[in-house]
Amino acid sequence: MSTPALWDIFCRVIDNHGDLGVCWRLSCQLAERGAAVRLWVDDPSALAWMAPHGQAGVQVLPWPDSQGAPSAANPASEACPGCGPTTSSQAQARVWLEAFGCGIPDEWIANNLYMASAESQKSLQTSPAPTWINLEYLSAEAYVERCHRLPSPVTSGPARGLTRRFFYPGFTPATGGLLREPDLMARQAVFDRRQWLAGQGLVWAGERVVSLFCYEPAALGGWLHQWAQGHTPTLMLVAPGRPWAAVQQVLAAHPQLPQGALRIQPLAHLTQHHFDHLLWASDLNCVRGEDSLVRALWAGQPLVWHIYPQDDGAHWPKLQAFLDWLQAPDDLRALHHHWNADSPNGPPPPVDWPRAAACVQAARARLTAQPDLVIQLLACVGTTAEAAQP
Image 1 (cartoon, rainbow, N blue to C red):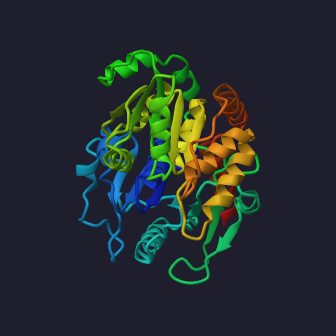
Image 2 (cartoon, rainbow, N blue to C red):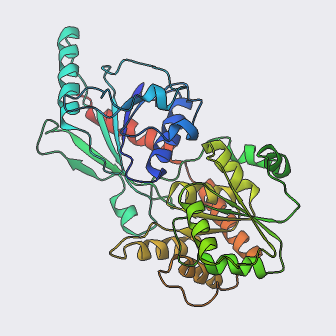
């Protein structure tokens, strides 16, 4: 099976950086496997720190305007200076991938199909239908296995007659897998924690290292008090943005909070590679959303997941399904529920951290035995492309 030459990937940044982070990792891994990728994004600004050097084979384009052409707003070249043009924005891609149901603009579809038809008439050949993938959100819930790779015929609009196929990332062999670079484990095996911390200008005296990447958990104050009053010296490395703002809010509300055994260090924005290094350097990773959860699983250290809270409570079954797949022991489950609670009761429950580490490492072993997401995407696209041939 040959890799399709050109992919169009569409991403809308809803909030935070997770959607763009996933799409950038996916784009880079496709390019490293020989594909050319055009990443269409409505707000590429985070790439300035997430991927300042760009990636060969990946072109970042602004979200198409109402005429189906790249918008003049948010020029990608400024947001991602290393992402130079790789192909014309009018070239016809064989694969369309919309991330997380963002929707491909009708005007772009109409313009693209018109251009493909015109090129077909010139060459007197039938233009193959594009393979259209809807990359869905990550979940361990049972519906993922049922819905993975299901087709969805388009019955209206300029794409009428085409078929979109749902692709679900996941944790089991019956799903689409997770993003994982082929050399990830080899790079981690030679990682030097002390050297990396020093390279970030961080003074490390051998304490337990905790990374904090969260939203605004109500339990944060209790956690800071517990670590400060504990017997284990702890260096907490806090990501910028909402995590650091949450820590500052707790400190402002509790000015007498004893520092004791806890040392808090704010971080600057990290590139995706250095964010991986942060997770590798930490003895406990407090992560949020989906992209950082996956990277924390690959890190193989104990983790606590702050799941994105939803008004209707839909995040609780999703969290429970993940903990079930993880085969999390009871104490780690209790800590997750405490960390995610709107009104947590009492102090954080104690956890057997060596047992938690063994749990995460066993889960990582199960995942590494499965094909990664890009391998499965390429197989899916190859199958659907063959089926679309006249």
